[in-house]
Image 1 (tube, one colour):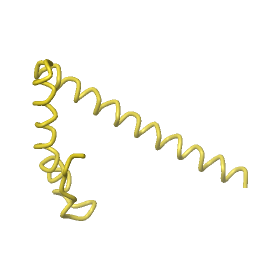
Image 2 (image 1 turned 90 degrees about the horizontal axis):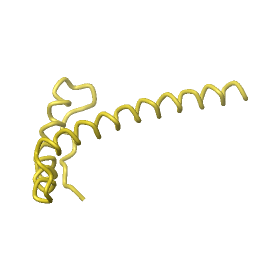
Image 3 (image 1 turned 45 degrees about the vertical axis):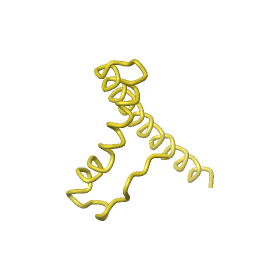
Image 4 (image 1 turned 30 degrees about the vertical axis):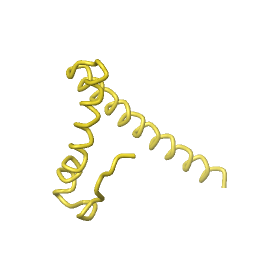
Length: 78
Protein backbone atom coordinates (compact mmCIF):
# COMPACT_ATOMS: atom_id res chain seq x y z
CA UNK A 1 0.00 0.00 0.00
CA UNK A 2 1.26 3.48 -0.85
CA UNK A 3 1.44 6.02 1.96
CA UNK A 4 -0.31 9.22 0.83
CA UNK A 5 -1.02 12.01 3.29
CA UNK A 6 -4.65 13.01 3.85
CA UNK A 7 -6.02 16.38 2.74
CA UNK A 8 -5.16 19.30 4.99
CA UNK A 9 -7.90 21.60 3.67
CA UNK A 10 -11.64 21.23 3.32
CA UNK A 11 -13.34 20.12 0.12
CA UNK A 12 -13.90 23.14 -2.07
CA UNK A 13 -10.72 24.91 -0.94
CA UNK A 14 -9.03 26.53 -3.94
CA UNK A 15 -5.71 24.84 -3.12
CA UNK A 16 -7.05 21.31 -2.64
CA UNK A 17 -6.42 20.17 -6.23
CA UNK A 18 -2.81 21.38 -6.09
CA UNK A 19 -2.29 19.79 -2.67
CA UNK A 20 -3.61 16.49 -4.02
CA UNK A 21 -1.14 16.66 -6.90
CA UNK A 22 1.69 17.27 -4.44
CA UNK A 23 0.53 14.35 -2.26
CA UNK A 24 0.57 11.85 -5.12
CA UNK A 25 3.60 13.11 -7.06
CA UNK A 26 6.31 11.16 -5.20
CA UNK A 27 4.36 7.86 -5.11
CA UNK A 28 3.58 8.30 -8.81
CA UNK A 29 7.26 8.92 -9.56
CA UNK A 30 8.00 5.67 -7.72
CA UNK A 31 5.49 3.81 -9.92
CA UNK A 32 7.05 5.33 -13.04
CA UNK A 33 10.55 4.34 -11.93
CA UNK A 34 9.39 0.80 -11.12
CA UNK A 35 7.89 0.46 -14.60
CA UNK A 36 11.05 1.83 -16.22
CA UNK A 37 13.13 -0.60 -14.15
CA UNK A 38 10.90 -3.40 -15.42
CA UNK A 39 11.79 -2.49 -19.02
CA UNK A 40 9.15 0.00 -20.15
CA UNK A 41 10.42 3.31 -21.46
CA UNK A 42 9.36 6.46 -19.66
CA UNK A 43 7.19 7.81 -22.49
CA UNK A 44 5.28 4.50 -22.63
CA UNK A 45 4.72 4.63 -18.89
CA UNK A 46 3.59 8.26 -18.85
CA UNK A 47 1.26 7.67 -21.80
CA UNK A 48 -0.19 4.60 -20.09
CA UNK A 49 -0.77 6.56 -16.86
CA UNK A 50 -2.59 9.30 -18.77
CA UNK A 51 -4.77 6.77 -20.59
CA UNK A 52 -5.55 4.79 -17.44
CA UNK A 53 -6.43 8.02 -15.59
CA UNK A 54 -8.65 9.11 -18.49
CA UNK A 55 -10.42 5.74 -18.50
CA UNK A 56 -10.96 5.94 -14.74
CA UNK A 57 -12.47 9.42 -15.05
CA UNK A 58 -14.78 8.22 -17.83
CA UNK A 59 -15.80 5.19 -15.75
CA UNK A 60 -16.43 7.42 -12.73
CA UNK A 61 -18.72 9.63 -14.82
CA UNK A 62 -20.51 6.62 -16.25
CA UNK A 63 -20.99 5.16 -12.77
CA UNK A 64 -22.44 8.47 -11.55
CA UNK A 65 -24.89 8.48 -14.47
CA UNK A 66 -25.97 4.90 -13.78
CA UNK A 67 -26.41 5.68 -10.07
CA UNK A 68 -28.60 8.68 -10.96
CA UNK A 69 -30.70 6.54 -13.31
CA UNK A 70 -31.15 3.83 -10.67
CA UNK A 71 -32.27 6.42 -8.10
CA UNK A 72 -34.73 7.87 -10.61
CA UNK A 73 -36.11 4.43 -11.41
CA UNK A 74 -36.50 3.61 -7.73
CA UNK A 75 -38.39 6.87 -7.15
CA UNK A 76 -40.72 5.98 -10.04
CA UNK A 77 -41.34 2.51 -8.61
CA UNK A 78 -42.18 3.76 -5.12
